[in-house]
Length: 271
Image (cartoon, rainbow, N blue to C red; front, side, top):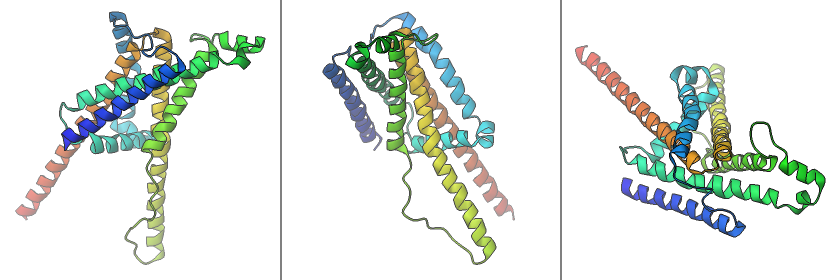
């Protein structure tokens, strides 16, 4: 079962990379995003990975999750994906995460971001007017020319939108729940439904938002380094931390649950 799932994911990521390469060929841009193996690019990628890793570990802390609803929503989505795709895996998740990080960088960064940047800079309406030329060449402080910044924003927005369409929980046709008679029981049921619906809504909002922010961060990193290897390394490290930390947390939760069940059963036997 796990082997079949790994093969299907490998095919999905290979297809994503192939589509990205095809887009680059059609548009006529560099298919590899300035890829060059160098120690500097690897170090840059490791350095850039620190910020999203620390942000993730902070958001996933139990105290933050219990106190902040958006963090709870992000963790709920992450736990659902881990239990659906990586349940029962050991080290096998590593090649899947590596393939996913590399193919997503080729598609979202090289193809989409590079394609948007090329399309904006090649626009006749912008290149034929002084206002358009000034907009294309104006430098956004500390970052890059406006056209490239706009390409980063557009590609990150598209990334979040695609993630929303693919992963957003579908609204159920109906909900089955036990309902007792009495006004108080109906009020309690209504409150529970409102809480459930609020958590579903927050999952739809904040999980794609996190993906958009990560795409925005990786897009700026590519602009700064000029080598797609740097954001590949950042994405690779970040994804491994996300999956590894999540699987470890779920494992400890199961261990605590088994211990609690064993203690309850032992207490009942003593009675």
